[in-house]
Length: 125
Image (spheres, rainbow, N blue to C red):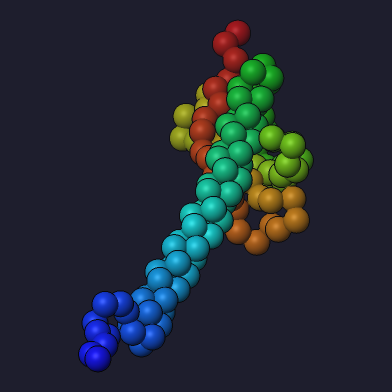
């Protein structure tokens, strides 16, 4: 009586296949986690851009010519709190002011999420 052992996989082959599968799944889950974190960070930075653009628009529609100096404030965008800091500077043309707006997360003011520069013109009289 003769037995055939080549009809299936050996235990060693199965273990190697499981090891390869485990490494592949680990890499896949790590990539998904990184992508998810990047998407959340991108969304927060986009909201920071909107806060900066809104602040610049507020200065433009206020109808007043802002004085040079610095200012700070808070804003809520997408249900999240943000802090903004602006610096208003004179330009070579006395009818314009340069405005630099930096936006930070409400709990972290070390690195700005967004920065926007623009100009505000003196209202015509």
